[in-house]
Image 1 (tube, rainbow, N blue to C red):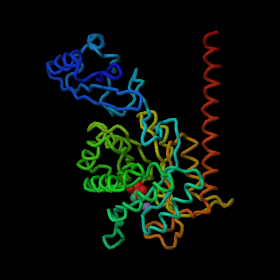
Image 2 (image 1 turned 90 degrees about the vertical axis):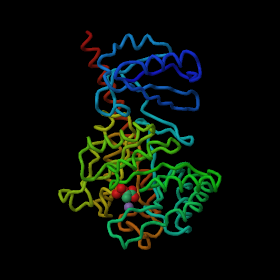
Image 3 (image 1 turned 120 degrees about the horizontal axis):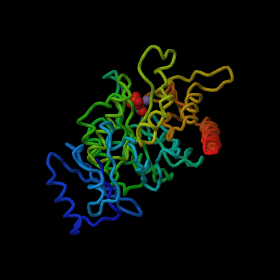
Image 4 (image 1 turned 45 degrees about the vertical axis):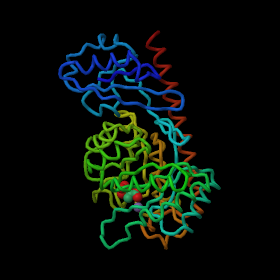
Length: 379
Ligand code: PEP
Ligand code: MN
């Protein structure tokens, strides 16, 4: 059960203390307070777990400061959509709005290699009006002898260059909690020139200890990639781990499933699940066509499979695209063969815009028909 309190509640006030006293004395119930500090207001929600079936909804609604009460199902308590639940599906980070109704492209390097390549990439992004990117510093690799990323040594120049070219958010994978501390330190050293979205990769989707650690910090939002060999439900529960620890600024990333049924693609593209996640949860949904498709194969018109898959995700309502680009793909240390070239950036962005417009038209279309059907039913 979730108690949603009136905005800007004073946590030192008498009413608040009385409420907490009352809740902590309820038998077999534990209360956990979650605060969301926004630009305009601070929202406080109290999560009650335990024997909540014994609690009466109306009694709880009449408690001081309580504005609304939502009885949640067992599944995805914090991130799920529940009956009568009109909690927000969006969050703000570093001046950007991420929600189930927005779209952001994160084009960039799979792995940071040289400062020159980072700068060329960021300059191109700025030239094309982009304020987000992806930059891998910590790379989990199948082969222990492969390049594992430059780690913390590249962070200062990556962050400074991001600031120079107006990049507001960099998606960056972390594979260990120490990486979060290294990122925080480098941001401090460089004067916070940019923001970071921590990425949990598909190999770590069920690394529960990492999820708990990353969930306990609220400085950075998190992009959680779907596990490539587990069920959707298991991956959504992994996202719930982050939220249950306090961080609900979570974006869920589809990146294809590992099975030879997807051949000749690197993974079986799973973007048909975009609307499923939006229906089950309040998370914005990201698609990663690069790691799903994994090749630069083209269709008979010359359109890349990576582009076709991107569009399939967007036309179904995806909110974020994570895509590999490289100024010199043949020199890339990781995933060069799937990287798009910089001259393809304006083309890719225009293609994305076409699909986004088509999605918006589709939403308008269903709304128009729904209102006609409602009128017919009422007549
Ligand atoms: C990545 O985005 O760089 C990556 C390794 O993705 P995934 O974890 O989905 O394989
Ligand atoms: Mn990669």
